[in-house]
Length: 132
Image (cartoon, rainbow, N blue to C red; front, top):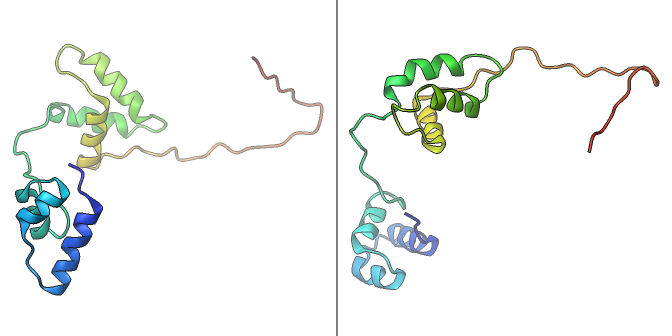
């Protein structure tokens, strides 16, 4: 849900002045529901959403996801594609949901320990070819 910046600013000004707004009037002016505006008023400019109590479809694969993401030099997309192929018939895999799930669970990619060191050679020792 996208909240109008002007609405949020007006509500914040009313809070600072100690004025309780007319939620129905604000709803008409900004084309929003009065209950949404009340939620914004109660939660400091952000409408609060109810948290879902159901388990994620990726929960059975949490240990496998963690172990794959702990390997050095893998990408999140690579882990996702591997799991989507391996468990193709079990669940419907979605990359955006997978990214959200790994962020929520705090699963981070392991960075490579040693970076690749660039080096220079004398002219004539190496050749570079650019292919079209």
